[in-house]
Amino acid sequence: MKSLLHSAKFLALDMASTIFFVVLFELTGNVVLSVAIGMVLGIVQIGWVLARRRRPDAMQWLSLFLVLATGAATFITKDPRFILFKPTIIYCIVGVVMLKRGWMNRYLPQRAMLIVPDIGVVFGFIWAGLMFFSGALNLAIALRGDMALSLKFLAIFPLASKLTLFAIQYAIMRFIGRRRYLAMTPQAQAAFEAGADGAETVQHAGAAA
Image (tube, rainbow, N blue to C red; front, top):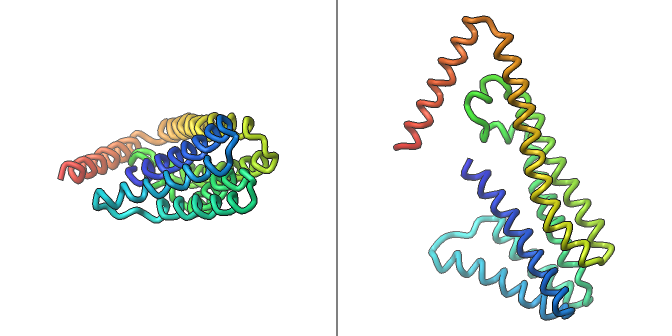
């Protein structure tokens, strides 16, 4: 779960940095200034991690590389759309990772793993699809060069789409899980409860250790 939350936090921070650039550009109208500050912030983020004697992970290094690369392209062309391509690249990379079959099951509660693991696999691919769709939509909006529209999109769609899919997934998995549980024989239900309780006890013991 820690790794999943870290990925969600990374995406949120990445969207926030892009929103910051768009807002600054809208306020100043200065592409060079907006990009320069964005690049400095990317370097400062990595510097802050290193100063705390921690090792930046691959996604943080990738984010810095993309900030510098898209920033350099923007400097050369004076076209602010290059910065807006960054979220699309990030979304596509995360989407590729999510194409691994069953990646989501490691983040499901033990009870869900025992009764609806196949649904978890399906939703893993659905999440990957959302990443690719978000990337494509961001690219289409970025190519239009409408900063106001990009700002609205980045401020609303990424979070709203993920919360919506999470709610849909929870409702569907709970509904199917309940139906499967009720369709079990009393003996199978007892075995299920014993297996779930035992696994949860082991997990709690491991967390306490």
